[in-house]
Image (cartoon, rainbow, N blue to C red; front, side):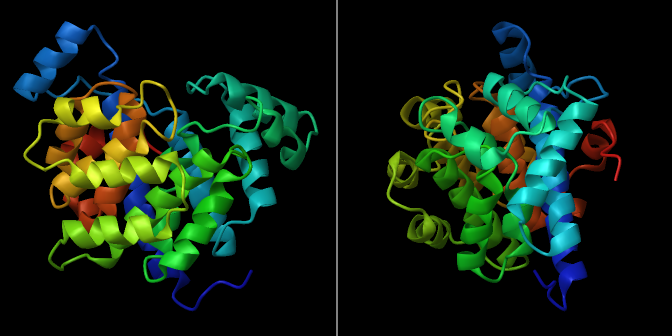
Length: 300
């Protein structure tokens, strides 16, 4: 595919989202401690001790970002190869069982188009497509249709199930909206309207409708009680809550992270998703410098 004339500027936006995603991932990962300890840290807003190592969320997002850099969009075959190469180089980032199987088979010469639909009897509806897609949305900030299209493509090599793809679409569009509204007033109603308009009918979409109805005055734990917090590792119980968190604190990366981690659950992934959305709006400079310094380097 042909790169647009403003490719470098778009990549800068994608990098903002990647920075927020990776910091959120590494931050959230540090709260996989005993619940009492985690809740005390959250109540006191006590930052975890550095360094903060990132997980498979960031590893896969790096492959997405590099594909955007090289092609100006998502080439699914190229992305699948990048996923497999990065996995082969380091399998210790916390990949799930389905990812281990799929990426291992791709490394052995298998084809993602044949393998992905066989995972979990119909394809994966996990939250992995949503966790890594932020840079795609930021790159296509000015065209929600393209953000949705390439967001779905970024999920395809691993997530053949409708719900897994819809989760990626919703987060891609949400991140595009955040990137498009830099330095402008935030409209929660417009945010949810745009995401719902581009998310196909699905359980994920139903959950987003529920998220829109949860007031921002609700506590994160109460919101997660209605929407899920990623404990099931599915797009359905992850994406709605993360959108609620992003819409609650769109202009403060720090507040958005503490809001998200308060619900515990799949905290590295929920924080990665929210971090990728909010950083697309506030930019890399909107991430606290000491948080970025605590995160393990990306190696870019």
